[in-house]
Every structure is written in C-alpha cells, then in structure tokens.
Amino acid sequence: MADDNIIYLSDLIESKIKKEQEIEYYIESMKRLQKKVNELEKEINLTSLIIQMIEQERVLTIEEKQSKIIHVLGANKKLEIEDES
Image (cartoon, rainbow, N blue to C red; front, top):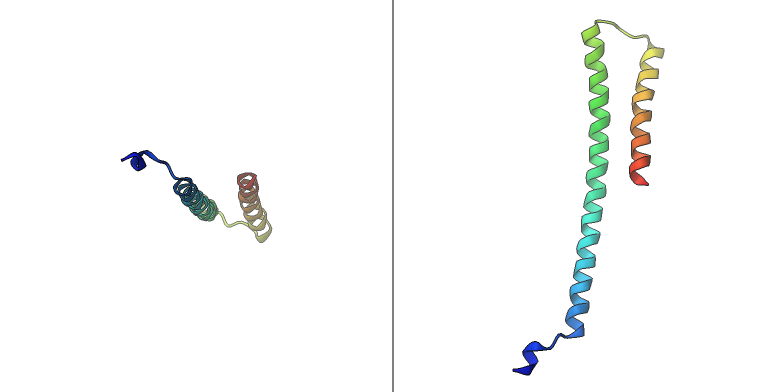
C-alpha cells in the first residue's frame, strides 16, 4: 500500500523526455507552418499586384514589373528574416 504513493525517478525522467520530444515536434510543425504562411503571403501579394494592374487596365513595362515584383518579394524576405529572429 505504501508503494502506491512512491514517485519513481525513472517515471519522472520518462515523462520529461516525452514532453521534450513533444515540444520538438510542435516547434518543427510551427516552422513548417510559418514557411507555408510566408509562401502564401508572397502569392497573395503577387496576385494582388496582378489584380491591381488589371483593374487599372494598364500594362507595365518590363522594368516596372521587375521593380514591383522585386519590391513585393523583398518585403516578404524582410518578413522572413524578422520571423527567423
């Protein structure tokens, strides 16, 4: 009967290890999800740019397109760098 109240060190260590593994799993999942969010944000920004161009019924020159795309992608890259910090 006295054995029911005993806390075994091995049980505590095992529990700790399982929790650490669970944390590692969730951190990796969060990293994958953040990467996916960043990719989707890039796609949304690019799609918004295309929609805006169509709504304005204006065709940009190649230089203007490159400048806008670089600006959009650069802003997203900055977000990624900040997220990694």
